Length: 307
Image 1 (cartoon, rainbow, N blue to C red):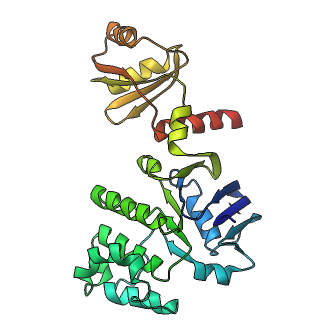
Image 2: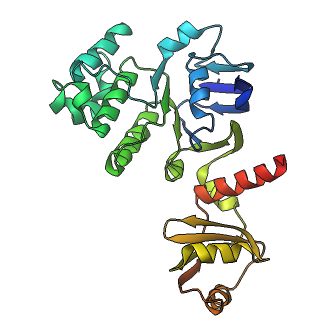
């Protein structure tokens, strides 16, 4: 039995399809990532699975229970960390944790082993009001509160949004430890670089899942020629490459342009072509695709199919 099973779930708001025929499963001890930009439907799906919203169509089970028929049982089995910090800002760290433990009929001491590795990092601030914590500390406190009743399934909706880079790394290290305790974890994120930290991922755009697979399998399966180009004239180089017959797609990626071509090109010939057209090119290299490259390629093809 899967920890989470989603079958043909759809949800609309005022005739706008927010979630469109979604299907996937998450197993016990699996860290499953829902990867997509803002507005892709991630939060809507989370609200359905955590029994806060009813789908228009389809069926879903969490910890073996139907999300509509057995919502009260599910709420005792799950931990939920919404995208926005939702703890009591005028209670201290210690008071927040005690409050959530009491709601679920347990104590901090009873399940301390589950939150110990996280709580020791915020324990020096246990008397501080939650509203006065840094973003990273708020994140750790929220995770402790979501875990204090020993849930079977953990839902984390964009938990690292607005958090500094070091805290993001620490948070994902915590998740790797938690899944070893056989907790099923469903996490959503708009950060494509976090996809590789999941066991499996679903790429989602405009309410529709584009692909589900292991991150490395997605990378290995990407066979289109991909080149990174560094130039002093980023915008004009991009516009030039858009017009070339060999170009399938060209997009800016930080200080580079990522060029997907219809056939393999010789790197030196490509560099020479650009230089002969007046562009100052400092680097051209063939590269492996990232999850972001793959997401943009799939979503571009999906868009062209729906036209």
